[in-house]
Image (cartoon, rainbow, N blue to C red; front, side, top):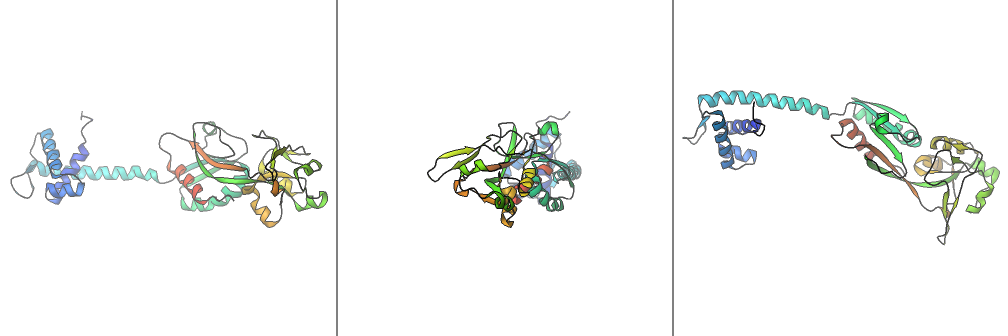
Length: 301
């Protein structure tokens, strides 16, 4: 059995290159080695094989019969190694099923619109997307990547930040026509404030006045919603006021379908958006390509 500390393919490559280029010095320049290192390596190869491969009595390398036979076999072996590496490297081409878990707003307004371009770049990838505002366990859910909005809990997951988005208080023009526009946070006590049914880091809506005084208002309206996209749709109906991320409602604001409220009291807090994945080992090419694509293309505000 061959000793594991012998780099036989490396020895073959140096030997073949020396023969092809006609000398140790030329091989050394091509391989970024010293001529003495090349000479010693071939001498070690000859000692291990127990056969002289080249005659050194002339300026140009002259192969012995054993050297000629070894050269022919070495060329063939190195060609096979190159082919094996090319076949393995084909695995670096993004391919296979990519499972992505994303919250509903990001999936609806950012990820799904980008999919045609991503899949056109990587035609051997198929994507399976789950939209939910419930935090999932990537290992249990067998997801490759998950989109997380808000602060990240410490975990063994690796995160790549996609950006931040400013929070905004919003209502539809139809609601404001019926109930008036609040001028300060105290006015919100007379309005229908729509909140979420799932646990959040803070249940109150934060405000800050011109003097820097902080306050918070807890939404206690007649409806609670389980996900951000459903909340957006509910606010668009004119039922009440809610607080959502700019990345989620930016197009509605630009089109006049939703109106920002109490901007003078907005504390400027933001939500961070991350793509998270399980670290350790080699990242599959399909996952790396998807993460790089998100960082390249996602524009939140």
